Length: 291
Image (cartoon, rainbow, N blue to C red; front, side, top):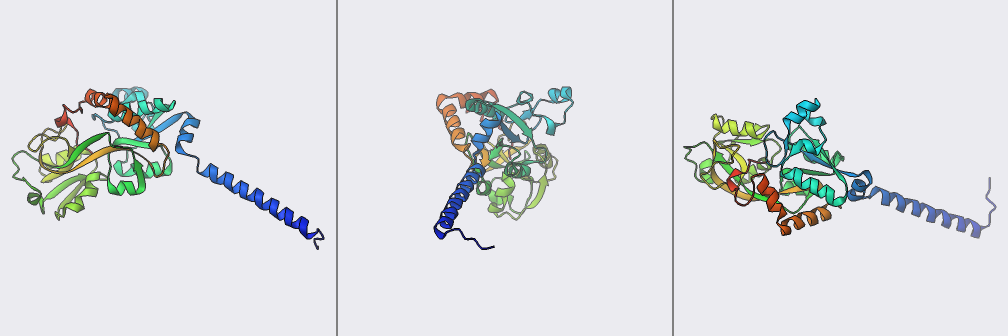
């Protein structure tokens, strides 16, 4: 059928349709770019992803609470059933946004945290997480709230005193950890024993299954790696690194998170939180081996 509508009217209809279409596309684009901060405030909670431990000053689970609830670790959500520096920090951050905190433990290890964040399983990752170049390619981090060294840890009596002494030796390092990312840059041609968690890394060295482990510590050379892993000691300090809270690339949670941490730092409250868990400036030898 021929359209006998005058040409000038058809032109106006096309113009109106184009404007409506453009408006709809802009609206959809705005919705698709809704920020993480708006999402958090709309649902009334910020979801923290983490890989907790049993005894850890940063994120530890309350075993008695887990037994009493009858829940598996992966199903626990209440922040009151967890404790540590990262838990305190994120409780305070949630409060600063006027929302609640929910914790979602990931039991698969550190390598699973970034994919979980990218999928949208949570809003941020707070899990004594080292800021590394590779991680920063895929996600953003808050300003560091804690610093330590990547160290080579050995059994007492080891003759390792330098990086050269580690060449060709067997190293224990945790899967998905910052140390595993860092290892190739040392050019040590090592035999690698990949472990699933810190205690396994520690035991591999203690029991002679590895010559040294890459771990995180603030202890000086010759001192125990930490109070939790006192059977091995720092042989070499390799590189200083910091812990940060990880958010999605471009997330608008980063700005308020940085502001919150900066406020804690300036007020001295950050040091108090660290000290409550044995990680203050006067407790440098007690830092756990980290990821």
